[in-house]
Amino acid sequence: MNKKSSPLLHSIGKKTLLRPFNGEKDIDLTVKWQNDPEIRDLTLMTLPLTRDQQSKWAEQIAASDSDEGFIIETLDNKTIGYIGLHKINWVDRTATTSCYIGDKNYWGKGCGTDAKMQLAKFAFLDINLRKLNAEAVEYNMPSVAHNQKIGFKVEGRKEKQVFVKGQYWDLILLGLFREDWELKYKKWKNQ
Image 1 (cartoon, rainbow, N blue to C red):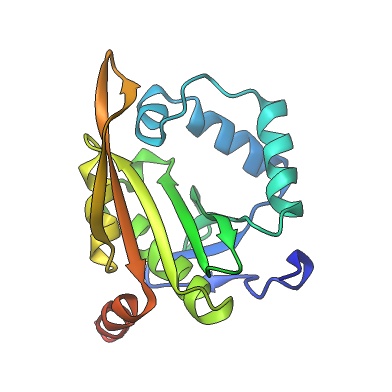
Image 2 (cartoon, rainbow, N blue to C red; image 1 turned 90 degrees about the vertical axis):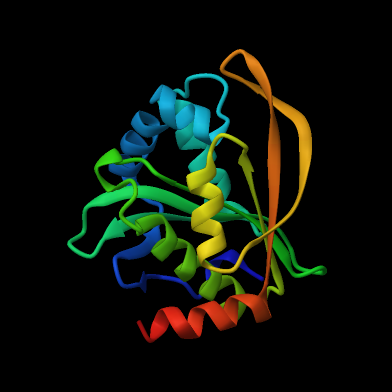
């Protein structure tokens, strides 16, 4: 798939909309969020992020044929987070997802789940993937729960895989097949 022909320009859900990552404002916000120690622990970012590093990363995502990154906004256009598809494998038709709500005022309000539902719709219906993967460190059960709400299932663990907060933690591996997502999507759409 050619990046310039990516079909997602905007996706509107029940609580959020997804739009392309662009501009200095997005870079400033994502740097601020990624440098929050609590968010860094949840996203497994080890070191603080510089603005230059984030700018280069955004350029790489924009140019990549195996990554798609989007800003999450509320329906009243407040920028609250980031979501993406990474390591898109066009032969296997798989990708790994990432998502975080950077604005803590929106934690626990269903915005991450709403955004992930839209991302899955894009992945399965627009670019024809068959499976999505996700990972969460074992103390980040809200991430596991939000993935499960749209149909992800725990597929396994990598024991004592990551070192955070002075100890080793398991990494929970999750997977979502298109057919499992479709069942959840039909129910979600009609709620």
